[in-house]
Length: 280
Ligand SMILES: Nc1ncnc2c1ncn2[C@@H]1O[C@H](COP(=O)(O)OP(=O)(O)OP(=O)(O)O)[C@@H](O)[C@H]1O
Ligand SMILES: CC(C)(CO)[C@@H](O)C(=O)[O-]
Ligand code: BAL
Image (tube, rainbow, N blue to C red):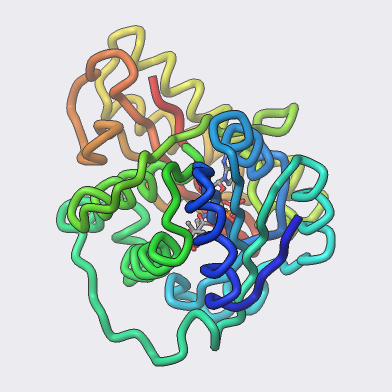
């Protein structure tokens, strides 16, 4: 595996590979890797000649300074894991390398950022859009891989690709879960043992609400069911539970076509804000 920490060295290497006809698959991450990330890498490995992974904890997408300061950083272990699944290139730049000048560009994702994560984390998707645009310019991949766990992020990147005409195929990959249903997330390591025991209630609540919707109940009833389920577990503070169209992320008041309804939630559990969703 080649590891680069400067844009110049990354570009130099990838230019040669592209000239030799290699297709490039790209997996952007913030590190602290787990099997959810590795599933994205493995999918890219199957579909592309060269697999590039970036690890960069992007300050411009954090609206909470403590969340940024406490974000887990485990570069050495990450590097070993990436090597073990056949990654070709690891790009792990410093903040100064990525942002030699403070970025002033503002991106507007319209409707997509007035709901859910966009509403709860002001400026978050501007930061994501900015760093992903920069990474796309640096890597120039043929395909880029994102996890369904961050469903709204997938929709934002899809719009970025469309509006800025990036010639990149976006691939949305399924959410990888722990055996008890908890969606894998780098932030899970910050849960106490007791919080970790309670954490699967999020997926349980989503599964319950999905069953209700499929049985003909209204979205509002499904939302109440999730709120009630979590209210019985005082460790959680529910931020939102929304029933939305899986592509537009806008709230809906009825079940959509198969594969087009998404139930999305965010909740605080101890020091960690967790998100999860199901699409059906
Ligand atoms: N459990 C998962 N299953 C599938 N993809 C995932 C999973 N967790 C993260 N990803 C995807 O991996 C990519 C990098 O995500 P990121 O580095 O932010 O990890 P994370 O575990 O989501 O961390 P956190 O939620 O703490 O920010 C994103 O496309 C994200 O959607
Ligand atoms: C896409 C991303 C790497 C941009 O910093 C981040 O938002 C993430 O890890 O999902
Ligand atoms: N996984 C999305 C990145 C973030 O939470 O900032």
